[in-house]
Length: 248
Image 1: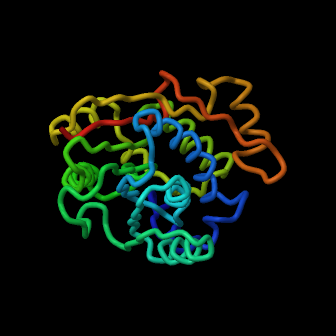
Image 2: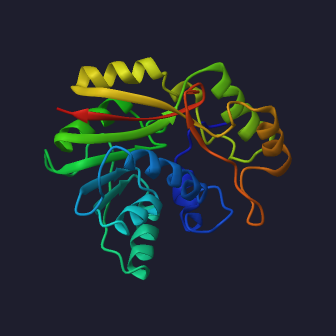
């Protein structure tokens, strides 16, 4: 079985904005992400923002509605087409580009903020993506990110449980070998030139709470007729983590 099968995004691009679909789970995750990111900036109004791996444009539209001047880039052409069409229907001005995160078509020092959520564990060269994020950021620009830690626990929950056993996430969606240890990411960020790295747990399991995991097993990750799983920003980075750093 092929792991980290990125064709999934092209084949399922029409599902980004359909409630209850796997790709639409990003909408739920984005609420906690944006809340965390917003704690580091006074306002999104007029801020130049880039979303790396923007998919169908879910996060882009959230920030556009808050007044950000936002651009999005994604490898999946079908996802970009969906994002463009949805933005048009929503009467939002968002600049979308199809391209690779390792070599982006943007000038140096262009953006005040760069987002990279649920992306680094999927790309060909995550270190080069960080280098590109640094390049396109202005001085004092912020880089916000989240990704999956490379631990036994992350393999157990993200792949064995959610993919192979429960099939709540399509099998092959993730490759544990591409997950990134927290310390490895911090090292590369600082080696690239970023400063003041802050990391928190992006916890979907209530600190691996037995009750939360049981609910996940019995009811799945998403259902149109039930409350979605709770996300906590805490100190438990053992599965998924979120962070911020600055280009000085």
